[in-house]
Length: 410
Ligand code: ATP
Image (cartoon, rainbow, N blue to C red; front, side, top):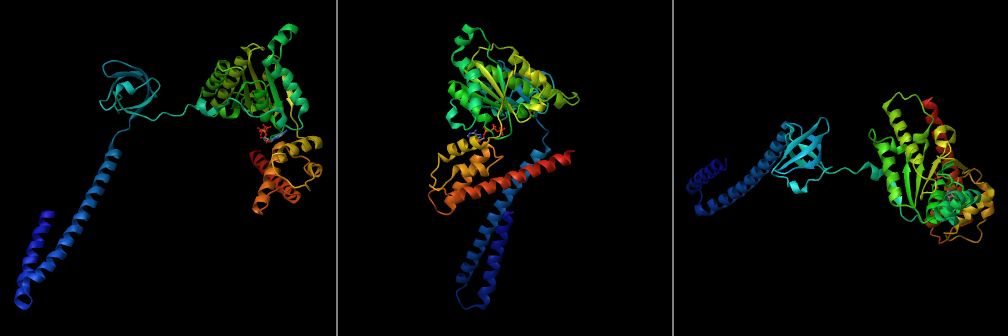
């Protein structure tokens, strides 16, 4: 194509030269030079267009190749053999002994890696990126939760009870052995959201110098079939290996709700996860250095099997804070801020009837934002009163949304 273009250009240059030389008085070579420059510029442009089109053609050809190529088969490496072969388990079928493509270094393959086999299933052609183990996502581990009983307001009786039944047995198991009583293996905290259940469990762990492991039970059952039970097993194993440990199972009603008819595979999965939890709890000594604390907002929903002796046999209510508790909680959260002398904590406590600890914290944070927005360096009583109204309104609209979604479910 380029060659033809150059021939055309040189012919048109020589024709133009001939035409010009018969009519013009200027030396013919000056005009010809000008025309040559224009034509050379045109050649450059056309070469560039040609290159762009070639690149596009390559892209399209690559895309067509991808569309036409047959799908690959996903498999997991079980064992790497000698002579460039490996045993893999394909996701759909039996274990296979396959070749390893020359593009893959066999020494980089490890059991458990996810790979792609060619469409005949005979060769590993690609190593696929590893997925995050659901176990890692489901479990939160805090080595040293920086929360102490002093950070919790208005829950003195709950703290006393947790100290006796969890902290003491972890710190001084010999006391219990000597007297001959068994502390509970598991404690169940129940109460409305945001009342400090997670805080209590974290404080118990840090007061006992134990690691804190949190799992959210309702999330376990959204995993693949069998994953929930596996994660429960792994969490207990991890806790035993890293003891002393406090396992906190949040939203336990997610797996511990009264048994429904086990119609769907989802129900059966919930059941399997719960049974694994019960088996783990039955299997350990009450004086071992692993303790389980569970939390729920719905005690009424729980399966009685969970509450039998040797399981969650100590039930502690964590209610919404009363007036005195609200004063304590406000003091704790305001104590971390700079506030004006006119702030009346007693008045704020009477204005916040029905607020949870989390709501009271939100009041202090919102008030801080009002102060910053208006360029002040400390929180005023007015900021706090406005924040109370805002949090009250937010709570009301959240409650209304909940009611409307529940009624649509009915
Ligand atoms: P949920 O049931 O929604 O999981 P929860 O009962 O576990 O809630 P937490 O997560 O412990 O509640 O509390 C949320 C936040 O509210 C805490 O981080 C803390 O700042 C504040 N808070 C709640 N209760 C108290 C309290 N009694 N004293 C001090 N702060 C509190």
